[in-house]
Length: 158
Image 1 (cartoon, rainbow, N blue to C red):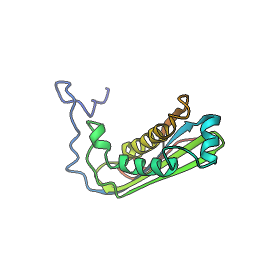
Image 2: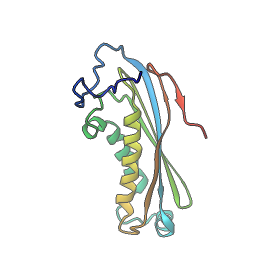
Image 3: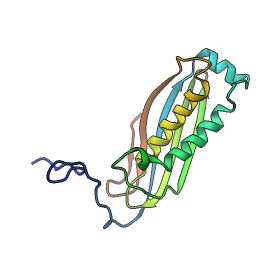
């Protein structure tokens, strides 16, 4: 017997899952995105001469702001208190890796908040450098780990 879809009602219409009966618990999630900068952008960043300003600072702030706005973008995501959001940016040559960590003490997890934060931070990088090179590309956006809640802990292998 297959499990019913949690976000569909008896008539097959989309619905938000009712979590009012659940007790708040501490939950964390980490997501990652990559941005392929290309040689032109990498060189300009190394020289500190990006015309729009500090790419990494803007990406960090954009990611934090995005974590708090995930339910505005994802119609079935719950509004939760994002009690922790951190964006780390690590560059190796032409590859920028963005890691977003989010935490809450709420009734549902922060996976979508972390994924949204990593995605929007990557978009902010592209916005900051698109005038230098239109070929800048966002790579895989993925959940790396989550902890807490009914399903427990999970970590991506590799």
